[in-house]
Amino acid sequence: MATGALNVSYSDSYDPYMQRARKMLAASVFVALALFAGALSGRHTVTAVLVAATWAFAAGMMVALSQAAADVGTISLVTLLVYAAVPQPPERAIYGGLLAFAGGLLQTLLSVGFWPLRRYLHQRLALGDLYLELARTTITPATATQPPPATAQSTQAQNALANLDNDHSVEGERYRLLLSQAERMRLSLMTLGRMRARVDREQPGTREAATLKAFVEICARVLRSIGESLRAGVPASVVPEDLRELRDLAEELREEDETGPQALAFKRDARFQMDALAGQLRSAVDLATSSTPAGVQAFERREARKPWTMRLSGALATLLANLSLGSTACRHAIRLSVCVALGDALARGFELNRSYWLPMTISIVLKPDFTATFSRGVLRLIGTFAGLVFATGLFHVLPAGLHAEVALIIVLMFVLRWVGSANYGIFVTTVTALVVLLIAMTGVSPKDVMAARALNTVAGGAVALLAYWLWPTWERTRVSEAIWTERGWRAGWRGPICRPPSTGRSRNQERQPARSA
Image (tube, rainbow, N blue to C red; front, side):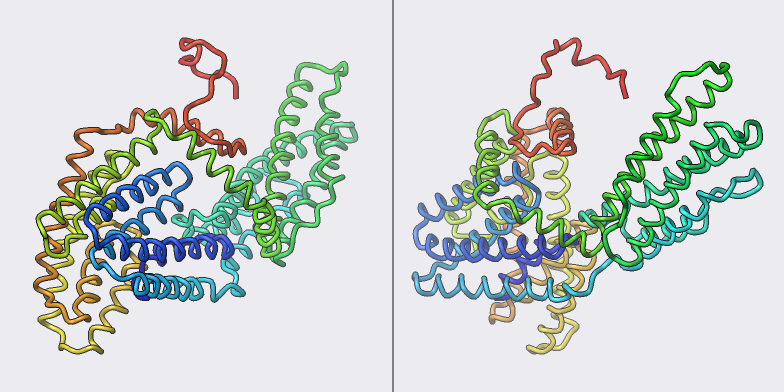
């Protein structure tokens, strides 16, 4: 149960609760299946190596789907390798798998137990105040002696969102985009306010003055709706006619008339600001609607409305498209499968103590790119030795007994989830000490555990780095694929991505930089 809870905790994140629950439940299922398969296959060396190699290839291919799928693949592979070293009869393997699933389910319940308590309330209120202040200053005539509109509210919103820098969830991105759109609108509104003051001073009563006045009044109404929506936590009540009227008012300044060059330049500048502001308002309305608790629930319902057969077919198409040596995911899967099989065979052949740590280290260290593999390999070695030294100190300083060990496990698990994601070296140091404590609770001598972990970690890291040296995938060869993948994702394309699609242009034309916006 502790193993299931520990492995499933790595799938916890800052995602919305529904997405988080689905991801952690999937991790619970795969960890339980991996434990069952490992415990069954471990009785025969050849079977265990073949099962580990097959599972490693599947885990490597998960890189083609998403980072969350790749993480679940790595976690389940580690679980399989660990429990393949402790073969069990079928009934015991089933019982162990159910216990691991129960531990993962408990971890999931603890993660989503605070579902009614929505996060981001402080950030939402700060952004609501910013948009309400923008609405108020929009209809106020601008003067050269005044600071930019909503300066104090903008500073407060930036301070409120400062702790979301490492939050890459969908909700966190929405709030950062709302702040970005507000900052853009501040500049547009300030420029448009100066232009309106100028036309009121030099050409009062003209059609341009009336158009600008009507435009800023509608902007203020839309901004007020966004601010009230964010503060109340309900979708924005923006009338679609207001957004259409903003576009129509901008079109009025495109009509040609017999005016001088100075007036034409003024109208061109005003059109530019009006077009930009109208687009920013439409984007802010969509973001505010999706950022409220009701909007988040609606977004999750739309995501879950897609039939599971379509989701499965999309994932299968992506995997099939990447079954090629030209795919980074396929090369990583082959490299991982061969190295895990080789490491497992070597560890079993030499009958190393705690031999599963050798292939487990390979599966954790080996990544699709060289930089991540090298850095994780070095940090894995440093963190392992630091964790062993730390665990040794704990056993010598603290009193022996079950209560002290349980308290240490609680503290180490807290540190692991608190700062482990910030640095892989800290993560490895903490998890090494945690594993030594968990094994020591079963009556095994800590000294034997530490020696075996050090030896297998060094051997596994060496195999992973040697494999990447023999068959590397350099980052420069992945730039084109990564760029096309990102562009396709931002464009809303969810099809399989294996290579950049052809544009129908020659290679020389492809190398020319784009000149349009």
